[in-house]
Length: 286
Image 1 (tube, rainbow, N blue to C red):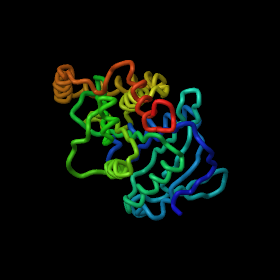
Image 2: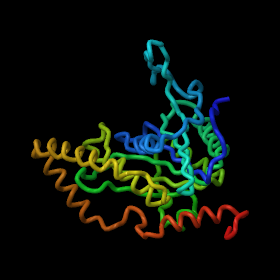
Image 3: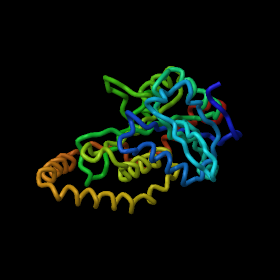
Image 4: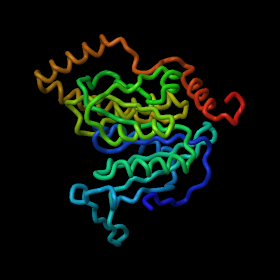
């Protein structure tokens, strides 16, 4: 038994939001967004996936910690928490985890168990990739879905990437086969500052997540942190003429970009809810 359930009870029309450290989490922007939601809503721990079958502990070593004088082993964790938000129509199931080293198909089956057991109506995966974009412009966030009806309803792209993939790509394929609706939101992170946490990219993901679902993400709480991060990068860039010239070229390219990252209509959240209603044939309008 690899999924260990703790304190869990029925949820209100849950949406599960996932992000994993590793291939698809440059500058911790995606896992940072999920952790922000968990902290903001004081989410309750409900389940965890046993790390033993999935990790090479010589590559990702557990850590020894002293807590109140007691020695404990802190293992790589993929834990789920729940934010109960009945006033907003959806509870959130949140997982900011670590991409495992081994047995991805079995691991995705564990994730399917979490989705089925919680009764999640929709899966949203968050990601962050390094790209030739400037730090001084709004981060580019793209949305896509392997679910044809959902992509059509919300005006999202269908995935077109070909090449090496990570756990998120494997999970999307499995969700598509299981006919579980899924949306991918991914933010572009400036490749020249890709190694440090990027609160501006996290803020962009949270803003777009709220835009799609209508569930408040409290992203405004990151504005000052993101502004301070941008000023810090400005200072570093201005100290190097070559880097400064390169960033200005990226700014020109960004300013000429005409395509919208995601549909911008105010009724996007309403379209989202309509799609979910249509998936529940037992309710009026389904």
